Image (cartoon, rainbow, N blue to C red; front, side, top):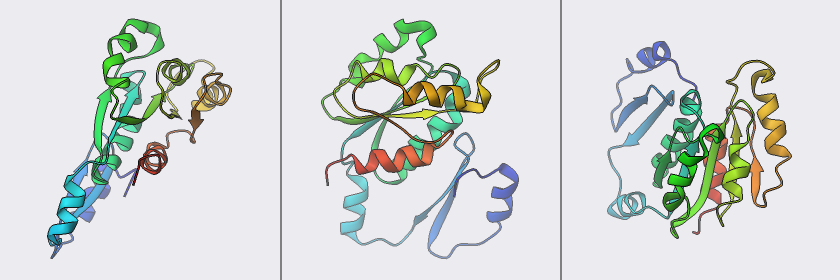
Length: 182
């Protein structure tokens, strides 16, 4: 479950599970359940990451959406590489992350950004894999709850950049997963 508050998790945690373990990630606001009884083939499939996905964000205020994407992908058995606080206001930070972004095992990059929403275009110009842009609702001034960032991302001239809805880390993770080889 996504968008779960601490209070909601506390209520759900009162439910006793017979065959699983409940986990809450407060930053991502996600409850996940891991089954306790899987076949050995299922365990092997889940424990072997298919390929890497990078989840990047512009600023620390984008962390909840970024973590929603990262935690969702990890629950699906993906290896996630996090590149956080790498916004265009300090381009040197994204340049320092180039080895992670350009790793040959990386199949997709998710980029979460609010404010001007420029980071996905920058990343799209630096990598050879699909970039999934996630506008976040943070910002001030003329950010309009993420609409400004979303419009910037939708008008990206970098090839291979697709956009999901505002604050949709889960949707970005689902799309990134579908970009992976079987």
